[in-house]
Length: 283
Image (tube, rainbow, N blue to C red; front, side):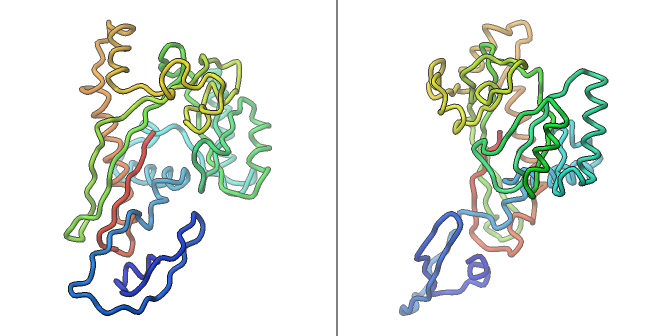
């Protein structure tokens, strides 16, 4: 399909569009003058941003190229493809031991590194041997990521921020344009934060995880807060810091998004297919 788009072939119709399968057929029709404009709501190389392993490589390469520590913007992350025999696993184990000795922190996340979303497959570990068993349990790509053990909380519960940007192929065909959607929002958990449990309801903000809990929506509608709601919370509970969401936090979010799109660059649309666009969600 993407090859047909790149070659601008005419007379093709999509007859079946499923998650893992797309079918087309050639249709005999009288030529139209001018031909219709094709618009494609997907970038062929989107996995450089949407897969966890792809995002790690994209951002690490970008920041190192520009002389920055990538883990000043990203959690410390390792991509393990060959279980405990992988060189990255040995590097992770050295980091695990060093961080535990220096800070006492032992919590790490293990995530599928390829196609996974909605919190699927994410596990929380505070034991190196149990984590090793996980990465040896299946022959696949795993991402091992340092867990933030002392996060900022809202009403003693964990949250993250979901923000969106629209990326589109430049009408001239050269480069990309990206637009930040102003209405970002917080996703909250339904249970108080604690390091004494590895309960996913405590630690994972994914809506697909939280909506399975009995307290979903108990504290905030659909476990969501707007940025304005967040500002009111900060004004009431952290007034000494006088933190402005719009003046301090949002510019950082926009900056990280811009870095990600610049880092992905031409890899998003390797065949230069015209009229492509896609909305990306950032957490």
